[in-house]
Image (cartoon, one colour):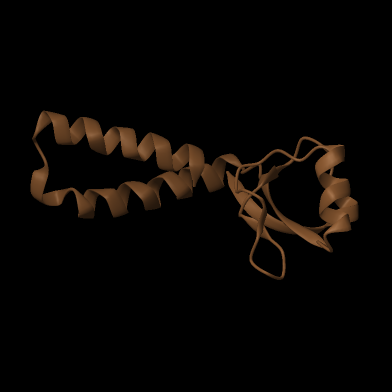
Length: 105
């Protein structure tokens, strides 16, 4: 599971992924969400006065947490897809959404 962690620029390593757009005080975009940080980018951000970055961080879940997460998502999707149950394409969509949410939520 991914989560967003705000980290001081000095603690950001090359190869980490930015979770949200990084803008300066005037609203100019310095680095877009999903951008991968490298040494040159870190230097440029520091020169522009950026002090921290929102990063995507992988969080390992226990088997119990994964099972609980899956059950909660299944219950939510069952409610959202209740009126189209039994339709093969909608069932396929439900399973695709569930797989996506379990991998990206």
